[in-house]
Image (cartoon, rainbow, N blue to C red):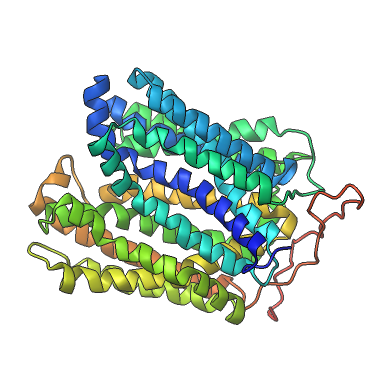
Length: 491
């Protein structure tokens, strides 16, 4: 078990941050290059939409599988496989001669992202001492978040100075660095009690369920809620998820052991994750659009407007993780969303002629401080509520919940707030919708804070150490069932 400030710990943190940044950057960077891709490949609007959504769809559908595979076959092994897969898919994206092949390569990229993203967090959970895990997860949150924030700026510079293909080709040397660091410095770990058989039914049903819901809500804004394709996709998604739960309940070797949800802290952390990341999905979409369309900011100024959030996450996330370890996760997970809710109510007042220094920057800073309080303790609780041997599946579940919440928010929130076709470019129509949406997001954050107070314990139960590192000289110790491990009030 590694110390946070040790050289070995820094190498592990470097590998996981760089690997996660690959997936985070490619979720945003392609938006900057869409116009160039359309001109170069002769793509229509549907082709460009699927260039974006193909990645999100495969990533959201398979991220749970990535967490399960890392527990069963080794977290480092699956992480390395995901990074290598992502690099090859990125190369195919950069060389794609047609938009159809680009979409196919983007879907392959999403599969690689689904393997490496939960593996990164599972490696941190399994590699660091229990006392240092919140610090490591906090540092990962801040550093990896920089990758997502820098995506639009990096993409704009590469497109302007070279070609849209560079936004994909640059992933290859970065992935090579990640592979070398992870191979040399990341210790292997797995769940020794995990079955080696493959849950094919669970895999297919889980992918169909998440894929159907993701596709349905992604197509909703363009086709409308009454469109047969949308209705069919949502019906397939709901049926797939119901069938997935039934199959996992009856399976002898499930991909998702349902007994992990007996932990109240794990249930609570994922409910809070859903509410908070649904709010975040709406915020990071609509604030930037509102600043351009209603407030009259330039695209660059609008993109830079939320940069203080990333800076604060970088500076304070590790400290917030340490604070959650010292005083327990309940208080920061309650206070963080409430601070964010106040910031969003303030942001809802941004209108025509707004000044960045007086109207935008103060609530953005407040929002960043709230996220700093929340994100690291939330992630640490989602992983730490279960036995260490379940690190991979815990990370996969939390990632799936966060990504599903963001996708649903982006699709549903503008519609729920009254946004009609073409309103994104109409200041008069967008302004009231933006205010309503920000207040809805503030309500989601408030609900997240209340749930955290009700469901998150003052302290997480210290699990009995389980030997998860590969050691042929030691027999595997099966983890204790975590059914009611956190019901006690003396955490």
